[in-house]
Amino acid sequence: MDASDQLPTPFVTRRRVLLGFDVAMAVAAAAAISSLALEYGFYGLPPGVPLAALHAVEAAVLGVFVLNRLAHLLLRPDRRGFLRENWVDFAVLAAVLAAAGAVRAGWMQFTLLPAAALYVVIIQVYILAALVVRTVGFQLKVAASGIHPAWTLIGSFAVVILFGAGLLMLPKAAPAGRELSVTDALFTATSATCVTGLIVRDTGSDLTTFGQGVVLSLIQLGGLGIMIFGTLFALLAGRGLSVRESLLAGQVLSEETVGRAGRMVKFVVLVTFAFEAVGAVLMYPMWRSPADGAVRGAYHSVFHAVSAFCNAGFCLRGDSLTRLRDHWGVIGVMAPLIVLGGLGFPVLYDAGRAAWRRLGRLRGRAGPGPGLGLHTKMVLATSAVLLVAGAAGLIVLEGASDPGQTYGSPLVLADNPQPRATGSSLNELPPARRVREAVFQSVTARTAGFNTVEMDRLSPAGKLWVCLLMLIGGSPASTAGGMKTVTFGVLVLGIWSVLRRRERIEGFRRSIAEGFLRKAVSLAGLYLALVAAVTLLLCVTMHGRRLADGRIVTFMQLLFESCSACGTVGLTCGVTERLTVPGRYVIMAAMFVGRLGPLTLLMALTLRVRPARYTYPNEEVILG
Image (cartoon, rainbow, N blue to C red):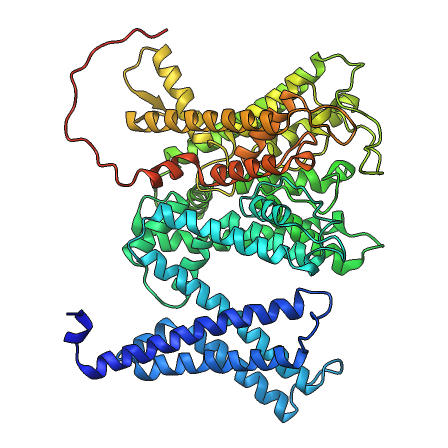
């Protein structure tokens, strides 16, 4: 007998009625998405589809959405609790009704839009807001279900990529007659969501403002994670986080303390938008030009501020920052944004809290408190060492190469009539500018993906050095990828402890548990195996392939491409745009695994493996 048969009849009836309204709402949501896509995603409506019919469908969808909310409010036993958890829905509905009433009363008018058009705009705005609210609500239900957080995280990225690819395939996402194919749209969406920056179609010229807006949204969602926005929505709605939702937020933020997950989510969103806003304002003079105007300059500033802080590497110029490298904003604004985005939110939180305590002590308003944690110290120290060592290594290795030789063709590219910028090779620059560009490339090689010199014109030693930086990447719980600075730091401390004949791993007067070393070795080994596998597959799929200037693709260029994809960096030696279709899917898989982390993926695949309750006898083996 069904369990529902044991419930009172009125309760069963109410539940079935509400289920019917939910099904109707799902159908209406699909109809709304199709209607909006037909109206705004095409250059002109398809034959036989009148605009009035689309607006009628949207009005009907509005009615279904409103009826669904009212039905739940009236039939739910806990009306007050339902209203408290869904107050955003009703607030948006009240705002829409108020706007419609203002139009009808003549209080809200626009000279460019008649009243009928205003009604349509109001309906469409409400539909979009309702779809966002419903999507976030569904994500919260998934998070609260029994699905493991690792699988939820993987599924959220996959859904965002597929939805973004669908939007990029709309005709209005690209100039007329240059629509993106399925493979190109999927590649672009994967690269944006995984904050990589590798492109097969130029973002500035091959995408319209609508397509660039889709890419920008995917960068923001991928940089923070859709789970962060879902958790923030729950907190703003006055909901407490369940244990599963807190664990999921901790999975994204690497926050071990479940009780601090909500506070960390608020901090992450606030800090992200604050840094991006300040960066956009400071970068405005760099992107404003008399030809584009103030609005276009502001749009470019916002786009590149988000791309820099999220370590995405997407640029609206075909040559990245090569022609803008002399502007102070590159090293003065973009480089700090990249570094701050790559440090990780737990580090920013810990450093900000320590700075606030120190400021309070200077004012005599706070007592002594704990200083920076071990994780923060390791991230800051490792990041500083890698930045300095990365720049010094580039200067030394490029200086040791043949001064008269420039690697890569200095000729005009066959598919791009724009010539290379003067000084596109690091060796062609004066000493002071060479140091500056080496510092910037050391910063951006740690998963940001912008470049001020052409990577293909680095020496083989310089390319390999950049590959090592790309493999290490940023820090845990940041917008960056790679095996992470803490993993690299633990490995170095482990080696140093062996050389010093210490039984335990030590750093900053603290001991690190042996389990962290095992995890670091596993993560580093998995990343190296991933890079080796991707490089091997590229060697097969790109055999005999030529670059735009006619040169055959070399092994070093393929290794560079693999490290860039697996570390979600975005730097390239010109291979990306020449990838074969199988090669593009290989890089897509590499970006996806690199963003999530191979250890997260393997843990999701081995959830049913139970830990053994027995051990075998010890026996020594010979090492070295």
